[in-house]
Image 1 (cartoon, helix red, strand yellow):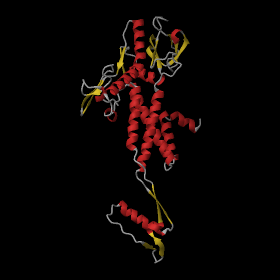
Image 2 (cartoon, helix red, strand yellow):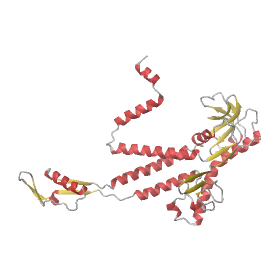
Image 3 (cartoon, helix red, strand yellow):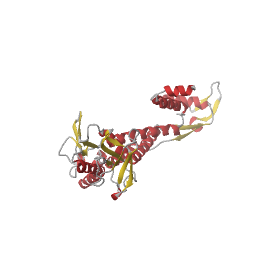
Length: 358
């Protein structure tokens, strides 16, 4: 057996990524601004992608599943894959499985489901749908979004998350570049190397906050050789002043973030927006958010209805609710409804414009 194979057998999978990353860092030319900015963009994209993904996973609460069903895995599968199969009383117990629908029947609903998970590949079952294919071994397909052409379109949330992560990372990268240009360096061109030492001395005094900086109108080289001309005539200055845009970019980033929150059915009236909104605009924002949340809630509720019809047992799903304790008080995420919306507020009687979910 070769040395490489021995190393491969004894090396943990995580070690490969660590070694590859360390090797990559050694090879990267961080002095190249294009490479540096690309790395920064990738970092921002990963940050926002993971952040939005985690928010998506926490949008709904489930209750009524058997104890051996991991509800957190359910939401991960719904947002990442778009749908998941669920069947009870198999030789593996009650299971959630990744797979594919087969034999499209009435209402464009698959009549059967074949699991593709590594440990459940042998699992397949008829798909129950409002009395159709009602067999003892029938299961269900739980969907993330409503799609009339079931599982042909993309029902996952990844495309939305990736789009907003890309836009947020792009704005953040531009903001970094603009902030960096505020250092406003000066480019100096000169005709004689004898000027370099004197100019460096002057800028050292500037950097040291010297109140008075003295220089000769005519410079002399050590040894007495006189330079031909005055300092102001011997230098050309290129001023690279850049307009400060960070505040405007931050506002745009907030708008992108708010739009992403709307897509997840979360209230998002930020401070900059709240001060400029009328009551009708605030109500319209709530209606939009409620509609987006219902787009995700309804397919989950349909599964609950189907499950009750077949088994006479109850599984429920609702928007996530929780209370967060902070130094400023108790903040409650309330259930989204048509009257108040989902509000983060210390005041249970507050209007939508008084709360921000972010």
